[in-house]
Length: 372
Image (cartoon, rainbow, N blue to C red; front, side, top):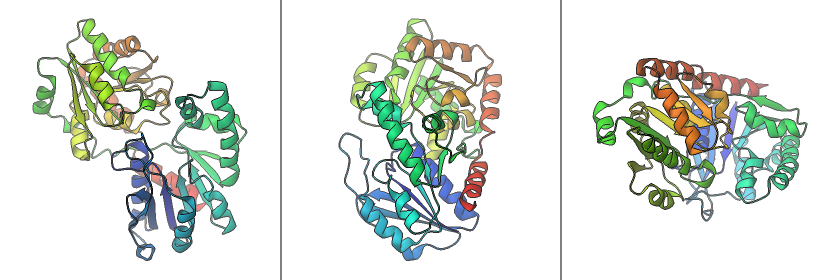
């Protein structure tokens, strides 16, 4: 098949969506399909004629930055349609519900089967934009009905992600969990030297890995660290990531052992950081899967996550971590419950949980849907 994946909000410093698009594309190509990935960028690059079986061809389309998002861009749908006409895909996979939400109509007019990946909960995102919960739900319901009607299939990674589509009676819903690179993210990445440098004079190393933006609520990780210190737990927090809330978080963390490491682009370095920690914190209440948390688990690092998110399906309690209420005290409680387990037990439990989610299984499931 000739498969084209199209995504907005795909950026060098973005996380889960970028990882999912890139890993699925690579998996399709490794199975012999001709794959093109079309994403926004500062300039138009790439040639549709370069798309060949067994390889991934990356195309960027010049698009303006969205103010206040830390560099995200949104493509002009009409320019995307013109490029798709040149690419002539057999299948179209859309990872966007903003400017590209109408691509299902383009595909239907040309007889191209299409699916849309629901990487976010629209009703939750709208509440972040200061809409009251009731209004956000009504707006999301209208948009989600249209999304489901315009595409052959809506693919969600968790029950949590699928809830808003089931609520409007959509029937063309499939569920495919995302995956993790179990070679890259592994317990043997643990680095005692790095761990010692980050701990300084502390005993427990916490890590927050993710974009520093409002919907991720990273301030809860800082507040949990402060709460643990107040309880006498000698902990340090390493914050891996960047975003519009960086300066505000630095101010909030002033006087506390919080290390801001910025965006770490090297995946091996990220794996080493995760494997070297005792507990990973995932406070985002709107996560529809939680790839960073899954990567931590694969590294043998238990996770304490928001029970308001899809991570309650991934982190189910016990030695590998827990999903807790959205406040600092509950996160501190979760960390202390994890630390009560023997270190070898909790690291083995975390790795075992992640082993259920190899990328190969995600790729095979998606190709089954695309073929059908």
